[in-house]
Image (tube, rainbow, N blue to C red; front, side):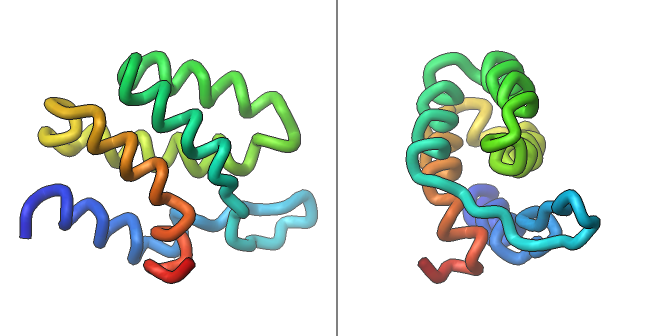
Length: 108
């Protein structure tokens, strides 16, 4: 198993990664939209880790995007540890784009 495959399995199997607490303290799966994930993936591929983190932190101030940004920051932290993604950010973009599928355990 290569590092990308290992990372994908870890993301897919870490159920806590995809949970968010609502205002009542209940945890539930986050709803990720394709447009948000595509935008984050594009920024990541084009500009790298730092700019993507800044972009996502700015989204934390927007209530309608807070939950998606929180989960995307968690994903970004996982991507930092993968040398293949550091060398080829297009791989990271693909992971962001497939995050909605990963969140459901590989089921759409």
